[in-house]
Length: 133
Image (cartoon, rainbow, N blue to C red):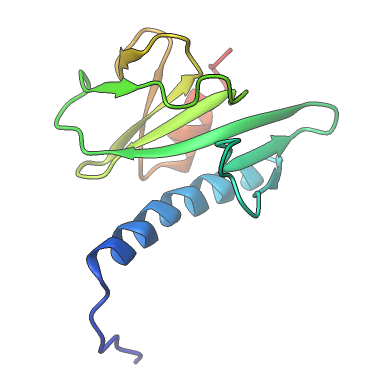
């Protein structure tokens, strides 16, 4: 059985975990029938995933947060970037939120326009994904 015998640097390990959330969302959206595109570089456009149903395209940003509860506040870091949705995962828990991009400078994760999902459930994620306008 393969065994990792080297130490992964802390920042590299965090990047790997963050990318795993992106890969999970990509998989879930493909399972749901979306065409999924990943930019070679998202610097400036702040788009981690671009999805399409054919005629329509939507930009998605994936973020991880160190949140101790649903009332955690998030900063708007995508203003003027044309992002449609931001999907948040709590790094230290098993839940996330889907949020339409908003104009406020800050907003709580549990805002009424956001949809909460279990981070380990494709079914729950897709159910909540389809409720977002």
